[in-house]
Image 1 (spheres, rainbow, N blue to C red):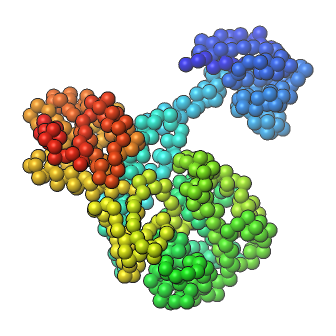
Image 2 (tube, rainbow, N blue to C red; image 1 turned 90 degrees about the vertical axis):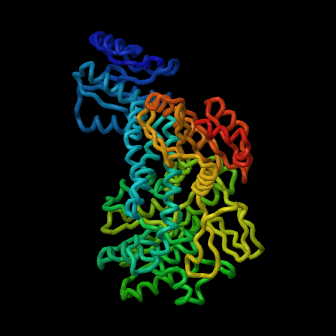
Image 3 (cartoon, rainbow, N blue to C red; image 1 turned 180 degrees about the vertical axis):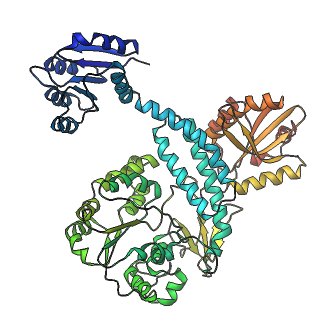
Length: 598
């Protein structure tokens, strides 16, 4: 690694030669100067990683030199070293964005630790993050396979999001791919969990999580009290990871007392989830109680025009219609500026409902506008744009105006969004809805031979097809049947520890007398899933062969019924000495022999 270049500026630099030698022995390249004028000229012509700056120098002071160096290169970290501990000096130094502040006399270790913190911080954090995730991988794996209930699933989701955000600090693409693979596995298992339990949650007699239609009743209205205005801010389509990205901006002005999660009803589209939230009813009941206001998919007119009417009905039903409230919906910049100008006028209400639509518009735009596809092409950049928007938004300006008042602020969302990597093809007639979250119609055809669906979710007689990120579990069952038909003995969901200490799961293991096969089924294969498979295979192979004293081979069984397999993926498998079977060619003798080789 290239030695870091340090510029040390002090008018008594001769007395610091021992410290200079100490830093050079630690691997740093140290240049010394005695005044600010020379330092400014040096920075103009030379690469410098960190400047160590004495504050009390004749001619230009340290602070004056600091300001001029920042004009030349604002990114250079500067450590100010001074005998002066006055508050004003510290305020000035911090205001000039110094990276660290040391009080004389300083010993060599103090300076070294300061440099290490500045120069090596990113690398050390990345290494620590990677190590910490490796340690937590097994805990998450065990949680996913311990029959989690709805509270456990919330906890799993929060932990996965935590590690996704932490992995932004890591420079290990392998660990990032493993995390994404673990998220994909969690998504598949969560789909199964919802399929098994969702219908029972709609029966009020059964134990169920807080959902869209009882969120206000259980989590918002109990906080409403006379004399203390409550602001209920609903940011349309805000995901939990986006909330964690903007949360630090909230903590600058508000103290966060609690953080909770709830389950959206299905479909999660705004028409259903948000109407249910304000009505306090499931959509079928909204249609019964508000037949004029409710609009079905095949009816003309806006689908979210009567939320305030629905909310009034909920207050009346809960006998809380004495609550003085306001209802504000922000759908454009003009609405946002009005909110900034009028938010003080809302302080006289018990409850103020604010619906902010920008994140939902951003979510749709990044699938339609080329510039946003580029700017928000992945989840990291999407979170970054969300944070930048909120920091400079009229909404943040409005909230700052009430931050010093005695108020309750509740921030929520109605649903989230998932970037689909494997679209699900649905063919219908002209009456089929265009909504991307679900399809509603009477003549729907599916290109996939097998599919899972929940019907009559809302006790309607039409079909709702729920999108999911993967139907790999269905294909896995096809592979299982294929093995059973050939009387091949196997161990399902085979777990093996690799040389990194991580444990990996393969769909099947076939153990022979002298050799062993590990199988992974791919309903769809892409760079991410393939990389994860090859990493796990490469990691377990030497360990398995040492333990079992058998030759171990990996086989990828790849579904090509819906999509042709890219040649580069097959070449990658060959390069890593992993075998493969293309599903459409599974009955060829050469492929059957691959499975019988064990």
